Image (cartoon, rainbow, N blue to C red; front, top):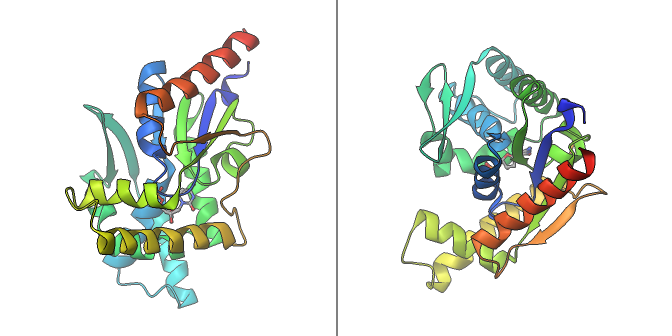
Length: 233
Ligand code: DC
């Protein structure tokens, strides 16, 4: 198999467990893990730091320039994926509500998406990798040898997000409803954008993770990868 296709693409809506699954699959296979959403989040952080107005085309242009010039790196340390911008660890900052609130608007710019895609293809190069996102199997690496599309009910996804951000409040209906609403809004934006909308690749393996325990979820992807690697050996 050409090493360029030794990529596992894990796509799906927010809160389906893409990044935790992808990181664990990568660790079990000894492959590299890359979080493509982190690049859009870094772009959103740059927009905030440079005080750019996403409704102003000139500011959109400035954002693209800033992203293109930026040195963005990723590495997994002790099971946690760290994201660096010009050497500064921005792992926590790119997950703040302020970044999350604008990131899907940042990601709807086709030219900015191209900058991210070129960066992703350059970063991965020839080494095998597991990459999670929304358009990895459809646009960024359409020749990935395994494409997984993760699904989970909106309620389950909202519950997981509350558990991450506000542990102990998973049973509070008001909190759950507010997370569900913001997830549904991001899904809508991701699905309806004209460029690289969130959708499964035609040859994707569907995995509904509602009610699946994490180990089983990871094991299914690893098994599918090993089967395909064997078939190709
Ligand atoms: O996976 P995440 O929540 O960190 O993604 C952040 C945002 O970036 C989200 O709005 C979807 C967008 N995204 C995208 O459009 N394409 C990708 N390949 C990855 C993320």
